[in-house]
Image (cartoon, rainbow, N blue to C red):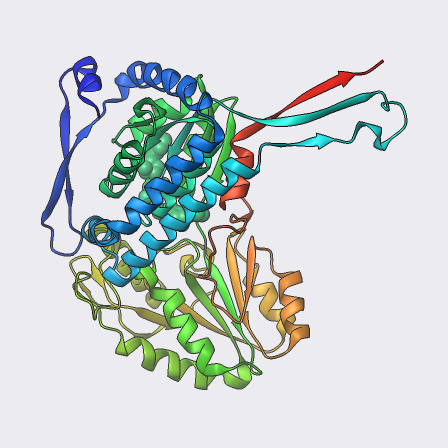
Length: 469
Ligand code: NAD
């Protein structure tokens, strides 16, 4: 919150942000009360005018300069992610590098994607017309983001919005706001007019006030299903982009390179302590290799070092909070009480929940049907690929899936049959490239991120047509 905003908002409360690993205070941040919405909107209106008047080369240069600055201070950004979100330092460095790439891709979009010629003479009747469409800004976009990728998921909204000439009302997760604040500071230092991004930190009441405000033209939300539904109810007539949860399946065929599948599934399942929307949650293994896969997967999981995320050798850091870890533990206890077998892990120290593998989980259990968002994996055996595809598709929402196979026909049958926004072949579900279209299938999914796709969602075509007669 800027000094001017503080004066207009009056008494400002502060929120403590705590390190999920050791509970230490990371810092304090000013909370914007929900009733300050008019102040936020007034600033965002100024921001919208400033943003649309920036020529495309300026938008691109600002995004590139910010990317260079983040590159130069990469370690500092990575440490911020570790302290507030609990990712391991290696994972946080990777997120920072991805953020740099997201900003660079956004700069490319600002320069490249300005509209198209409309071929009026392609069908009879309009030969005397000539024209084009431009990509115009929407105006004010609300960006609401979660805690688990507190830097790059914010860049995925700010980058395309700036490239498209929009102002943004950003509400980062109140659990991990500092990476977002650093990103905004960096963009402003790179030349972005201050009013283009209005950051407000707070909880659900503030989020509700932002998404329901009439001048907001689009809500770009990343987070959980319940929040997505609440936003949808409150938003009214505006564009919605919803990037919600997952419960990703990976199919392991007996004809695959098993060592590769085991290593990829270990990374895919426990990255960010399983707090990853495309993290591998269900691994479906063909009967012919089930025992071999399970033994190697359990052995590999047991070797992971869980602990202090700031240490270079740590593989699995804490979950975001003790209560999140307790919920994961309770979900595993409940499945166990219904007959599931726990193969490893399932012990907790504060927010640190050790990687846990189960088999024989009932297919109506929440570990099978819903997103667990924790380092918890369910193994299940199948006989035929058709059966595995049917199992993969059981939840009524999905983001990504994976298949390991040495057989091209199997790979293509899975790509065709799995209902998901992305099917990774010979990779776990946890592969994402920031330029690809990214989003879900089935219930609740709306829109795609991935810079070009978000940019197109955040702009509106305007046709200019010349009548030559
Ligand atoms: P969350 O839904 O609890 O919170 C996300 C954001 O919404 C936060 O900023 C929160 O303050 C805000 N919010 C809460 N209530 C609101 C309301 N009523 N109106 C407006 N805003 C409100 O999610 P989380 O726990 O921070 O993140 C985890 C979830 O995010 C998981 O379900 C995960 O799968 C999902 N996620 C999805 C993607 C994707 O790209 N599909 C990526 C990362 C995370």
